[in-house]
Length: 144
View 1 (tube, rainbow, N blue to C red):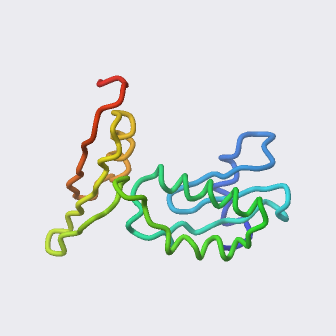
View 2 (view 1 turned 60 degrees about the vertical axis):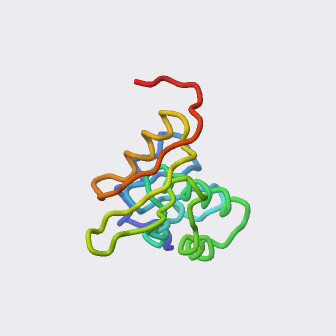
């Protein structure tokens, strides 16, 4: 954690004009702005997140949870330290094994029972070699 500074100038323009609070993320860095924070806000280092936390959507969720926690008075240093112990929920982009010889991760996303959720999860893996376990009962939604 560190106060927002000139080095965060690439994040600041991502805020919509007129917004005094919110969170923007670029990679594993997030700028959190709240009316109660001095200056431009604080920048949180999401690289402290466990490598088990897979996907951009989970980085967005962590940054948004940090915004809410800090807004309710939590110490930003403690919030960022908490990233290290954050684990995905069972069956939701949960890394269950990694083959040390090939680097292939086995990821359980069996709760993604609609197409949109599965697509978001798969996109979040990026170029990392993985076997993704999908399943469950299908929910309504487009299949395209």
